[in-house]
Image 1: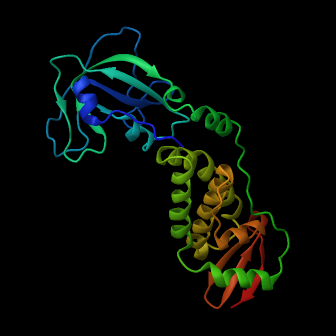
Image 2 (image 1 turned 60 degrees about the horizontal axis):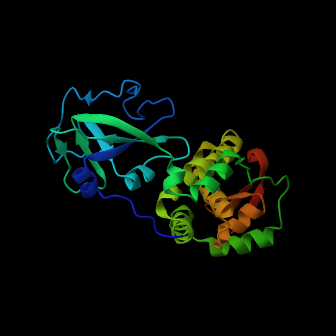
Image 3 (image 1 turned 90 degrees about the vertical axis):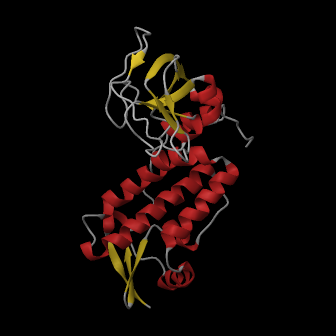
Length: 266
């Protein structure tokens, strides 16, 4: 995908502009502040933290679009552009990754992000129509020899290795910013679906392992959503519709709705 260029912090400050993301009802996701742009008046902050050592602080916190894309689900937020009237003060925190703040802002316009990133039009449609599917559907124990063979190649730290590899594949095929939003809309929805179906059925002693497996199911869904070529051996277990948990001398196998399908000796 073609690299899209956005303004840097320095460029926005020089142009006395900045962006903020809000919920669709015009409230801020952190403080719950209700915005209204009907009057078009200059908005003055009650206070301004002028300490550049503080990344966040009192004042109107603005950001670059890349920062916003990496810190919110762009499919359920809106992006608003503000101007910074003179002689408002502007504070850029040290080592800022894209944030800055000021004491005065004025509403300019609401950004339609698909106009800046045309490829998002397709993603927005797909996300809107996305229906999370729980892949753990096995009612009976699959072939134990096949499971054992797969487990021998799975290895430890599955969640971490899958996550790193999936995001590397996403970055190569799409770009960094969309990854977070798709993770929230696709990966987390599948994680929730799997976890809700098994939580009540499996013992608390293996919950941590099951959670990791549920996260892996979320990454499995992301791979399918993007039609990525990446594969991990654990995906073969998910294709079988099962969750396999290491428990000392055996592998515990769970299927649909957390049903314990049986154990496999190591």
